[in-house]
Length: 146
Image (cartoon, rainbow, N blue to C red; front, side, top):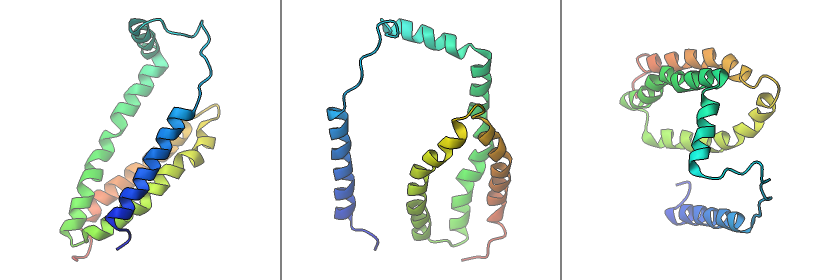
């Protein structure tokens, strides 16, 4: 057993308490009067104007549709592996290992996305991820029974 329920709850309780302290004790710099939005309608009008920009519309279309190609593989591969006999404990261990990676990875990737062409990393990684998604969806058929 990796951790008991009491240890798990204590860890997340302390983390929650510390994050609440940060929120309560952190002071924000005042907003310049010319940048302040007067009401909620003005905020939505500003957002609508931004969304209407051609580059933003294209980006929204790509980001909203690109996940469709991964959804089947992401949602089918785990039950397929369980049908082949992979224990749920192994999947939980993989999830446990992947969580810190998913927390640290954005800070590593930030240096590649902060330059003049931040979308290049996404474009470069899209095709390999698509190939891996197809392989993981079809890989359960060739996995040895558990």
